[in-house]
Length: 80
Image 1 (tube, rainbow, N blue to C red):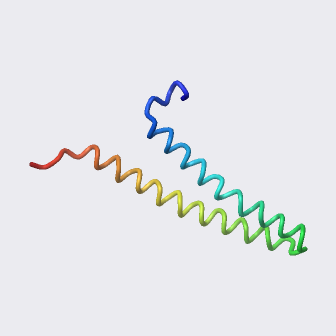
Image 2: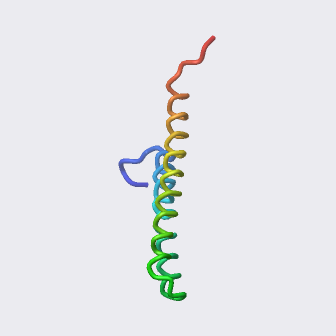
Image 3: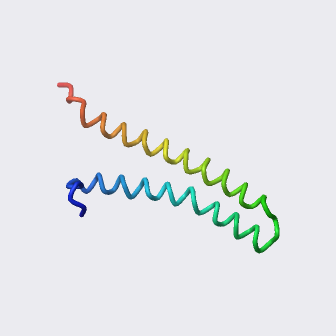
C-alpha cells in the first residue's frame, strides 16, 4: 500500500474513482471504433463522448454523495 494510505477504505475509494474515469473513457473508445469500422464518423465519437461523460458524471455524483453520507454517519454521536 502507498505510504500515505494507511486506511484500506481510502484505497477502495480511490479505486472506485478510477473506475469512474474508465467509465468515461470506454464509451469514447467504443464510439471511435464504431466510426472506424462502420463509417459513422463523427457520430460514434460524439455519442460516445456524451454517454461517457454524462454517465460517468452521474455515477461520480452518486458515489460522492454516498461517501459523504458514510462520513457524516461516522461523525454523528449516537443519541442515547
